[in-house]
Image 1 (cartoon, helix red, strand yellow):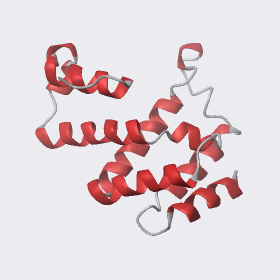
Image 2 (cartoon, helix red, strand yellow; image 1 turned 60 degrees about the vertical axis):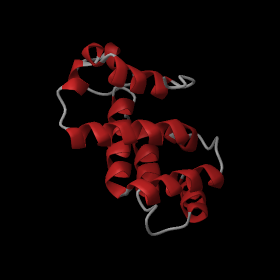
Image 3 (cartoon, helix red, strand yellow; image 1 turned 180 degrees about the horizontal axis):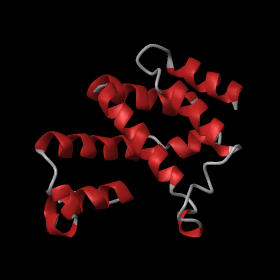
Length: 136
């Protein structure tokens, strides 16, 4: 039994213990399931929304960097893509034709953050953090 302290843990538990409750997960291939599970682990350990708002520190980027070194850039890219998709859906119920959240103010900030975090394999966590904060 998993310790379900975070929403990510709850979803991971559902996927493993009650897969019929998450039919889209059940239909995935083994490699796709693994990628999805790793992305949930990334999200549990690092909150991109906090970085977007300048609410975390270089240490948190370092934690993500360690996860990337352990799991690989493919997982990071999937994680970032999934977060961009989620953020595009913010306020989605208000307008089915586009993203109200991903406007001229929020989109450049998100892309600057994603671009900096996407360099975790080549830059230090400190450089990424302060590079993003400087662009923000």
